Length: 561
Image (cartoon, rainbow, N blue to C red; front, top):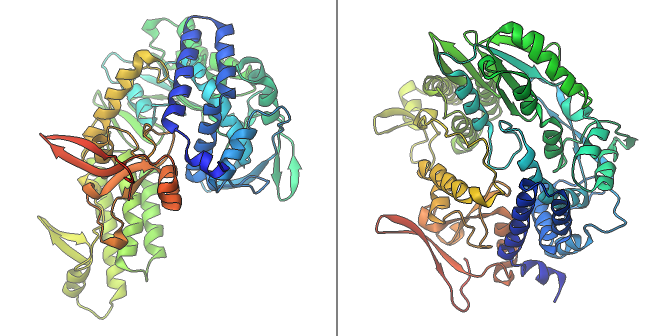
């Protein structure tokens, strides 16, 4: 059997089951306080073939996997992926320097990003599969950044819970760590992170290449590495426990952290400035870090504060969470740039660029008080598209322009869509406002005791958004990829597969779509039924007795179209 056939015939369902079982055993060992057993299980997991295959799949499946490091290598073929999995954890492994690039920030500056090679990313992914279950057991209760099944919205809801009541804390310390990823102490990480210390030391000291010049790294964890967010989280864990040990409940000192951004509540300004802030400064100093003097401040809840793109403020005693002014200004500027760049483009092309931006922004802020802001942005977009349409036809009358570019749909008379056009511009006002249900603070996605909780939570989340095609397909498929038969979770990107291709007359209806992993989708279209992971023919969701379910039609020769 060739290496290509070996990769295409991998039983991913079995591989996921093996990795999950070992991760569960690691969690049980950590909870029992058995450090020796936990260490042994982590070693077994990292060296298992299942973990190595899953690591390579994770690195190469997402769109970021197409980015090469300093060696220019990208694993494009199944054969190269199988060979890469076989090389992982070899005794002679030495990481290469990172490829330094710069990405723009909102403030106009640029942030450095280090791109490891595919080999280094695969090695890190394998180590992370064993490290992450341990990190989840020791993480701060209210740490939400770069953790499985947690999100920005959970952090915002935690802030809301800490501040919403009449008797809640009135003061908030807005903390900003100066260059967190760039300054974390290497010694602190190598001494305290339970992973292969030699590998970790080599990753931290790998350095980076910029314009052909090598630069060493003496501090910090590289931004761009798969394992870096978990390393940073583990370095900052313990902050919540420290505050709990040093302050009484009556002082209402609560921490909410998302990666290196965090806020701490308190009953008085003096408490936060004179006791909490110095304590946190000493905690960070032990890790080679410090607070930014300019950006760290104490605010009263009646004056409000910004956190993770949201603004929280009490109006006459009622706590309101809204999109921050900077977030609103950012999406308005993005819309303005798109319209300016498409002055001569077709209407459908302009709609195709605007709708993903407005839909993504609205979905992100739909859990807070956003209805009025959505309407204001919709109106601003209407003004820009109206000017865009008038500029294209300076010699035509306004009624003619209106009839060409703005159609009537139901009670709406100004829907941006050409006459007989297929697509209409997405309107933010159509997005319903629903409060996000915060995750349980002590929930662990690797602990079997929480398995049913997470399954129910995922199903309820997608059912609430069942009108959205992706969520509707996820519910109808019970969260399973019909190609590889494994769970559709946030670790891999998804794609929608047309059962009958559009070139053969297929459409975008739910009955003609299947939600699949992007890697499965790519391999299916490239290798067809030769791929061993295609074991069933999916015929789309059907409704029987009021319930969505998925039908898999097997039999000899049955493959996905």
